[in-house]
Length: 350
Picture 1 (tube, rainbow, N blue to C red):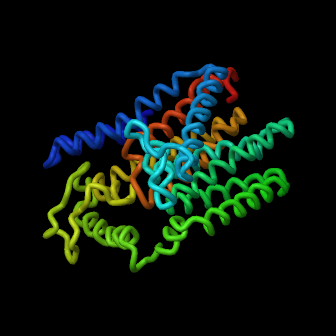
Picture 2: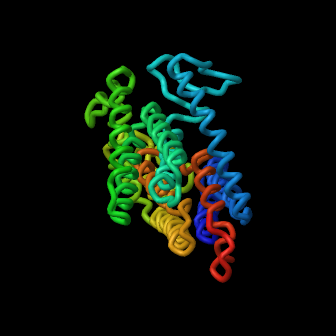
């Protein structure tokens, strides 16, 4: 919480000195509203049973929405209800589940990482529960495939590999990982060869032809030029730079650079980048402390989930705004709530 306040306080100071104060304060309020209230709301639920019920309700509701989204994607349910999108049109749209497909990709990796951790690391599960967790994990991996989010294809693949490697390292067993891998590959292969949209998304991923890729690549040298001119403090939250100040660039310093790290280094400078790094370090440190001390599988799962988000943020900036950021900070707060008390008296082992 202290690390969060340091970053946000620094950002609000930059906003006070920004040229466009309205957009700067709006951006910082977006950070604040997406991080602090969800984290605090989660953190102050300290009872183990309450945490479990809240998380199970959350996963149940989100899964029901995802099921309807998959049905809608294949034309078996309404694609839109009350301006909320379950899926795009036909097989050429995204599975949406009421959020943008990239955000859904991040949430898919979050939920599937948690279910995989419990499938692999939870002792004493009977066969029925293991099968249920296996189906649940595979379902969310398939939803990830249907999002068409290539950034979270990469983040998910790396995250799942890390989870399986950690499991094999810890237990020296490979049977369940092989089952998960085999089923996922078969189902993903079926989707790929029967879905023109997914084929198009992957085949068009070119470093020199597809605009969504080339635009991102063009932002890197531009961001470097901005960084050279404003290294310590950046240009300020949601501020733009006159293109005349940037050599050999046809682009204005966008308010959204399709990379959280480019956004941080250009808008908040080295100081802001370091404060954000300190925040992430504190989150991972606390989660690992809870995992090692309380054997909390939720804490272990969130370590991998945060890793996936940090990988995905190379290609987008979803930590800037609601839903994904709110869910990550809320679940993190929920897991950490009451665990400081547990250092002296172990009252919480979720």
